[in-house]
Length: 380
Figure 1 (cartoon, rainbow, N blue to C red):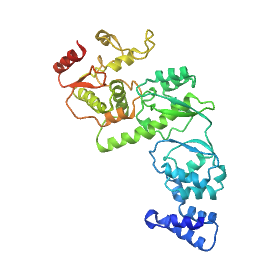
Figure 2: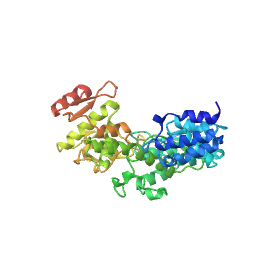
Figure 3: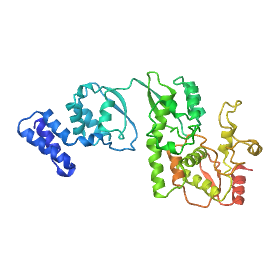
């Protein structure tokens, strides 16, 4: 079977193509029968399906690393893109790059691509391979100062620049288009970006990477992963919380929970306390307010004494202040955010860590039960 015949065979099922694709297929068949070249057939297919070039496969899709080996032909690249879930139609992508003379411009190298990109955007990106990159990890539960310190100690990025930019919350300093950030409607003006800087491992170009590059990537990832989950939870009625409050509570859950399965339970405890007008009395909020501890070189003091709970004068001290603190205290991961969006329904108001180092907690409904658990598990 020659290449043109194979192309017709691959697209011969009406059930797998739409009306425009079917029209293009008929055109390809006619051209093939007339002895036209493969490029001519591709041009017909491209014209019949041109509207699909501006449609992303998954608008909420997450960026992935895509590698093109040296010498890979456009047809093979198109197939690999489809297999990676980045595009829907390998033949259409091949048609676009070949008809527009871009096939030889596709570079070998490493790329950050997303199914939220249109085929045209992906073709453009594949003409600009990333330079050998550096890997930067931001851990769940870190406060932004910890990330800044890690960047400085690793010698990969300017930690102070990261701290200044993330603390100021001045997104205009990123020098990029902010119109795609739907979360900005919830982010308090002038507040830090704590809680909005999504924790993950990021690949940055080794060619003079900047703190702004990392912040931009974190905000892009936040928009791509957190916002669809938030809007879905709001639409389903699972939560009535504003996004900023979701992130604030999720950051506390992140610092408290060890096991993913307990995150919705712990979120439910704090939501129950809020509903009853009780103070949260969350230890991590006091630790956050206490800041850096020079004697240990750490940002989180542990343990914190009962006396200290009453002496830390800060709006973040939930032992002294009712309601949620002013904002997130750390970077919550996706599981903690989902735990707050879909909290477990129960009547627990207290919890204490189990002594077996499993990360489990023991939950109780009354203060008397809680005191008994504290005596049992902490010997107090």
